[in-house]
Length: 92
Image 1 (tube, rainbow, N blue to C red):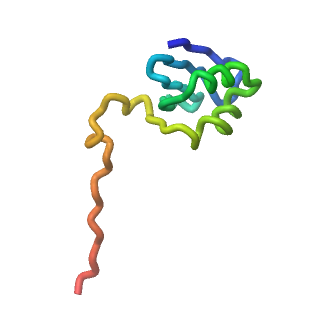
Image 2 (cartoon, helix red, strand yellow):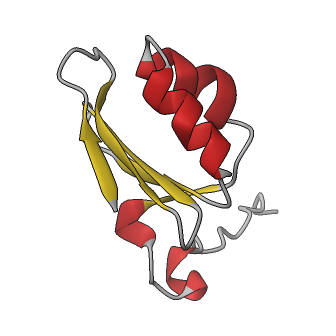
């Protein structure tokens, strides 16, 4: 993966791109890392050239591409599902 540090960014620690999988990995300063799926190489190149990487992610990546929290990658989907909450019924 081609990893790029972003020390001047207020939002991002860094980002990288896996061309074979077309995954864009973005590590935020708040500690979370997200993997955006099926991102075209052109988007990665535009992000590299963007003056503000955080603004680019907000405007062109978030809400456009599916993503996963890096911590959840590889875990079975059943482990990621929240337990079903049973509705409370008023006692008669």
